Length: 113
Length: 318
Image (cartoon, rainbow over all chains, first blue to last red; front, side, top):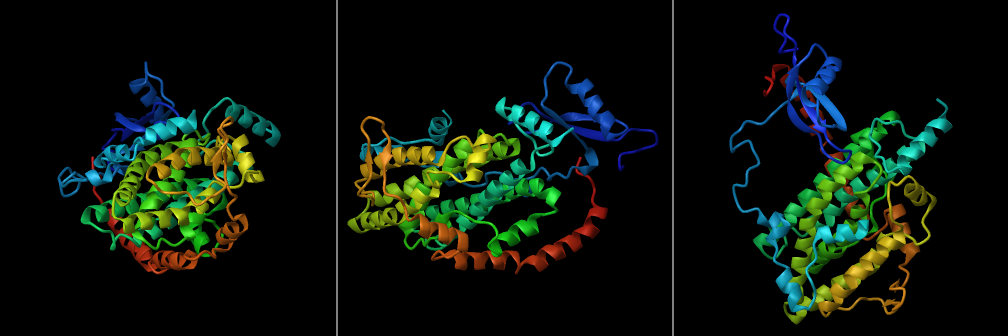
C-alpha cells in the first residue's frame, strides 16, 4: 500500500452507520496491519461507549476527494431556490382557492401511519 | 443449515421488523421480487424524465426552464441510485448495469404506464408534477418502511428531492388555474388526460401473487387499493378547489365508510401498453433511450480504456 513505510501500518478511514436506516459517516482514521485488524481497532478506538449498527474501514489511499476550491465543489454560486421546496410560495395561492398547502412530510406521515 | 430453516429464521427477522442488508442471506424469492421492483422503479425514473425533458426548451419562463431541468436531473439521478441497488442484488446472476439497461430496450423490464403517454401541452408538464409525482410520492412514502434497508435508505434521499417536485408541479398548476380561460381550459384538458392513467398507476384491487408476496416480505406495506384511496382522498379536493372537474362521473365518497367509488380504468388497454410498449410514446422514448445507451457505448468503452492509464498515475487525495 502507498502509505506503507518500513514497518508502519497503513491508514484506514473508519465509517460508522448508527442505525439500519442511517448512512455511513466518516468518524476518523487509524493504523492497522490489515482490514480485519482495522475493524477490531475501530471498535476499540471509536466505539468503546457508542453503539454501531455497521462499521466500514477503507484503506485511505482508496479514497479520492475533490480539491477544496470553488471550481471543484458544488457551492451555491447562484440562486438555486428553484430546486428547493422552499423556493415555491404555493400556500398563498392555495388559500385563494380555499384549499390548504400540503407538504411531503405530511403526505409521508399519512401514508406511514 | 437447511434452506427451510434459513428461510424460517429470515421470516422471523422480517416479522420482527428487522432490516435486511445486501449481503445478508435472503431467499431467492425475496431477492427476485426486490430485483423486479427496484429495476422497474429505477427504469421508470429514467423513462419518466423523457416526457418532462420534451418541455424544457418550451417552458414559458427561464425560472420554469431551470426548475424543469432540475427535475429531469433529479429523475435521472434517482434512476442511477436505484439501478445501483438492482445491480448489487443481481450480482449472483452475473447481471450488471449494461444488462439492466438492455432490458428496457428489449422490452424485458416494464415501466410505469404514465410514461408511455403523450404530454402535449405545458399543462401536462405541470400535471405530471402535480398528479404523477403526487402518486409516486404516496408509493415511495410507503417504501420508506421497506424491509430491504438499502432501498429504504435510498428512498429517504429520493423522497426529500420529490418534495421540490411536488411544490414545482403545484406552482405550475396554480399559475394556470389563476390564469386566462385558455390556460384554465388547458389545465382541465391535462387533468382529463392524466386522471385515468393515475387510477391505473396504483395497480389492480386484487393484487397479483408477486405484489402479495412483497407485502408478506414487508418489501411494501400497503395494498394497491389503500394507496389509490389515499391518492383520491388527497387530490380530489385539491383539483375541485381549483374549479376543475374530475373526468369520472362515478366518482363519489361513501359518507360513512369514507371509501371512494370510482370508474375502473381501462385495465386491458394500459396493461397491454405496459407489457408491449405500445403506448402513444413508448417506442419514441425507448428509441431515445437506445440512442443514449447503445449510441454512446463507444464513449463508455473509451473512458474505461483511458482510465486504465490514469489510475496508475493517480495521487491519493488525503
